[in-house]
Length: 181
Ligand SMILES: Nc1ncnc2c1ncn2[C@@H]1O[C@H](COP(=O)(O)OP(=O)(O)O)[C@@H](O)[C@H]1O
Ligand SMILES: [Mg+2]
Image 1 (cartoon, rainbow, N blue to C red):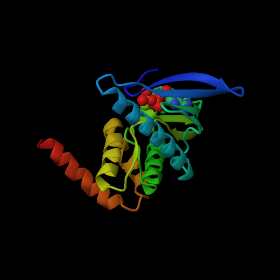
Image 2: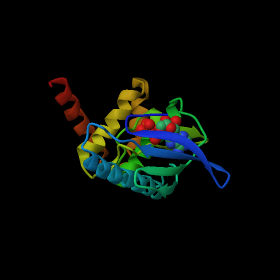
Image 3: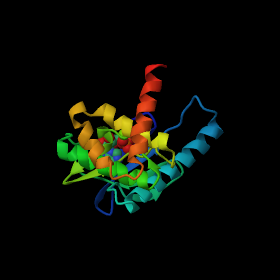
């Protein structure tokens, strides 16, 4: 499987299925710079996964960190169908990530896996930040990728985050900015 940033493949470790996520070279970047960026981002992705787990968000376990690749536990499940219950749960998960200053960077249903519980995957575009706008954009990204009738439930789940009101205001500002761009 190949996204823009990484190639994902599957392997086994001690009899268990694992995922190898390899950050691929960007040929349009100067080679040395590209290597450094990929090394840094690989490490950041590992730290985000680790901190997300500590924050109480289910996500793959980091098994090994190499310069450009991560080995992760395999989450056996499927991309969820977003029901009312899952929309609310998804909001709660984002609230927990944001409380830990974790910005996911691509918070959409494609980066969730459901199997009895809901897991968050793919922190490859993530970073640490306490900026309201960064958090507002994570919320907006999910709102844009789910049906409008689920918006209130997702936001209800997210409302456990302390800066909820500020973030809602910022979402309106961001939306207006995009509208008049
Ligand atoms: N830990 C994991 N367990 C199970 N499947 C995974 C895991 N990590 C990635 N995948 C699968 O590989 C796909 C791509 O991985 P992802 O981390 O989202 O990278 P990208 O979107 O950058 O290609 C996911 O949509 C998912 O289907
Ligand atoms: Mg992905």
